[in-house]
Amino acid sequence: MIIEQIYTGCLAQGAYYIESNGEAAIIDPLREVQPYLDRAAKNDAVIKYVFETHFHADFVSGHLDLSEKSGAPIVYGPNAKPDFDFISAKDGQEFKLGNISIKVLHTPGHTMESTCYLLKDEQGKEVALFSGDTLFIGDVGRPDLAQKVVAELTQDILASHLYDSLRNKIMPLADDITVYPAHGAGSACGKNMSKETTDTLGHQKATNYALRADMTKEEFIKEVTDGLLPPPAYFPLNVMMNIHGYESIDEVLERGQQALNPADFEMVANESGALILDTRDPQTFAKGFIPNAINIGIDGNFAPWVGAMITDIKQEILLVTDEGREEEVITRLARVGYDHTIGYLSGGFKAWKNSGMEVDFIKSITADELANIMDKETINLVDVRKGSEYQSEHVEEAINLPLDYINDSMAQIDKDKTYYVHCAGGYRSMIFNSTLRARGFDNLIDVAGGFKAIQDSGKLKTTAFVCPSTLK
Image (cartoon, rainbow, N blue to C red; front, side):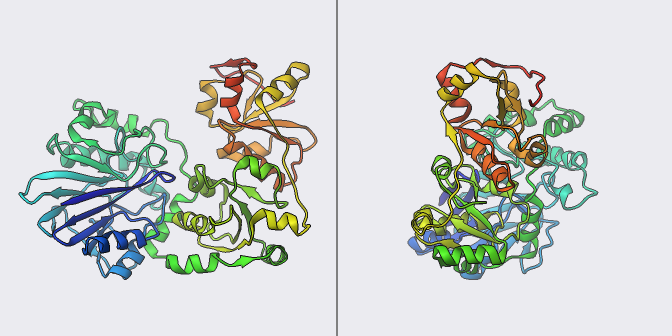
């Protein structure tokens, strides 16, 4: 028997490859499915089933392409009603896979179709639980996402279902069972997930706040729903794609990988109204970029910020990437449902610059330079981290305008005044600065390295409480 967790850090997502006696199953596959096909072929195994734990919100699953290319049926638990052929599994139903079996445990709460899969080994012993978004390491699935799709499913109703699912289906299982969740720390599908991506169920019973044995349903609902931040806007759109279907990843890649020289790139941008997305390193971007381009670096928390910043999932996109990374960027966009990349700049930004096209830049300064400026004059310092980060510790003079709420934040910026902008490490501040610059805000200066660099310099006084502050 083989169990492999295929973890994708940028989405904090775990897919699973299970194999026994020449038969394989994939649980919660990502959009690009060739790696699963290659993994099975390596062992001369046949993919027999594609299991889905629920309709995912944070990514577009690869179930349709994988089913078509492997011939394996798609399996959902009870209550799932997608617009394609699938097996509607019953609670308690078992699927044979080689010499092992996988049992369906219907666990509504995160969503109403949410299902865990309990693996039994060759001797029939229950050894692993693929818990989807029902149970994480250190947390449980947030119960407020399904209401974005079905209005009458309030978060309290879903949390009540989740409480029952955990107590009746999961907590009675043996302590030595290994828990394999769908997500880890960094995912927006929970609020308190551990950086660990597996654990024993017994340890979770002892340490996970939501599994306390003496917890009442009312206490559970209160604790699970407390402090939930609004989910990214693209979540319900991804759910709809997972329910109704989508284009093959092959078609998305073919359309996106249209190499355009600078002149053609400019022409297509002007004629299509496409958004120019530059995925290079933030400080590289600052030194020169195509006017009106938005920077979301591929080497940061790329997919969630794309989903937060590009509100129209059908927005046409033109790419500026590091050379050789075009396919990677198109794939990672498609993972979260952004399928309408229509080309990329051949030769990258260097080709644009060498052709004599117009170039823009964003001024960037070091933390030491910021301290020197603040020693001489009063400035507008903007901290674009989340409110919780700001409240934990921030520069005394800074005001908090979170990137998460950029439209509200933008309303507080005066185009005629100069602002110095920082985040935690320099990634989010460049998203903020480039987005506002594309909208005509020309007086934003980036603080390279963000709050970490400010702390390391030791030249600015910080505080761990919220100070009332206003823009000057």
